[in-house]
Image (cartoon, rainbow, N blue to C red; front, side, top):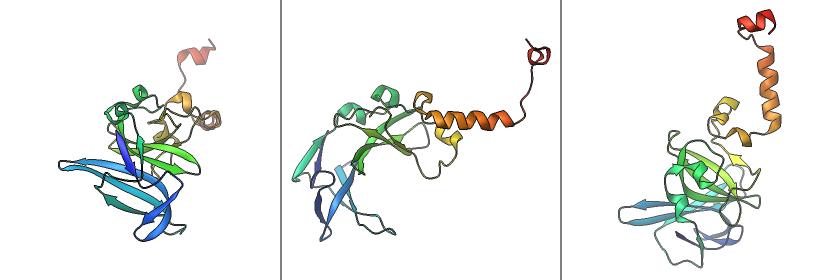
Length: 176
């Protein structure tokens, strides 16, 4: 799918009469056609982004996203280390890194962003941005595959569970 864009990520374009750096794009297919939402950095800590929506397809720049990412299927098949099914609905650009925004249809339509390279493949050991309300390890582990959980997080989980009461089996009792 070809995504029309006013400029490349990180470069500046007009947003409601003010020139600002482009930080993201999302799309939505309505019955009457595609709608694109462009996000721009404001530099304001209270309102970090500004945006505008358009159905205009003629822009100064365009990027091509593989159609396979737009299909709702297990994200593992897309090549991303996420549990559940989902599809790409946008792209974000933060701190020089590109993230694909997945709508996880198997997890209450949650938005999960995963770092990718210029070929739209998962960046090995890349960042995964979860919704802000997912503040516990249990919630994070529901969506991120174990092979991608940081080792320090696993060790924290082991230390935490070691101090808690655990049910013993007969084999634990007799030392086998």
